[in-house]
Image 1: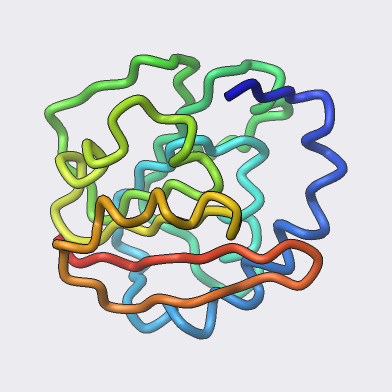
Image 2: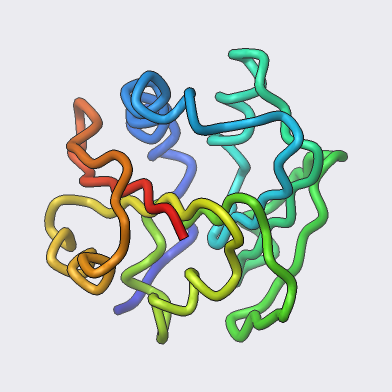
Length: 156
């Protein structure tokens, strides 16, 4: 799949609509004390949306493949530019929002989590979430107005 960062800015409104719809369904699981790994962090719109609701995580590590995607950087996030991210570290929450279909080994996200994994994909790619059906799914549903996503919140 080819992805162009040139059109990313035009997606902000529809992404933020998804985050608004998602928040009531996941807020009870999230804690300020969490360490977070966000695969495909982009402009950190999800983190900004949560901060506006009073939820600022203790630590956020953001991964993206394109340095232009993470500019400007948020000062409280540690960023890595790579398409081959691997770590032995475990995080409280692993986020993969609208990026799972670009990962060569999507199920590897489970290895990075000691607690929760949040994955979401546009409905056109929803079938790729099937790799997680053997996991404990805490919450699941459709979100978004202009563009519909399907999300899973998984307990590891």
